[in-house]
Image (cartoon, rainbow, N blue to C red; front, side):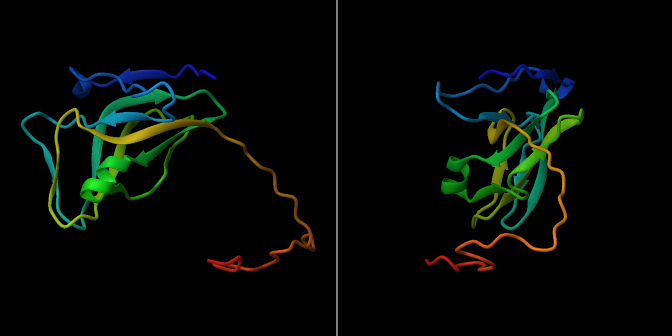
Length: 150
């Protein structure tokens, strides 16, 4: 299934390539860092920073963009996103920025054009609440964390 998403590259995106799927079966596109060439962003261990992508999008109604960590950055350097997944709503028209956090032991430098997160566009279902006096029984019931075993 293909969905048309209008994209507006901002001035500081100039010279970068639009995100693309890295393989035919990829679920997400990698987002680039649109930081100045001469001003890379250093994220100290335990610190988080909002990194600009230089992109604003117009999603069709009924869709969201999920911003998730890149597995390679997480595995090699301990780099993740603070709110994972972050959601870009269909009515948001501002710049997509990625809230990166450094869980690793060393400072991490974000350079211009570096692929810093992945974006997945997905359908959204909105619900309507149906207040009831009781919920139906299930085998699990009200069992919480770990109640189904290890």
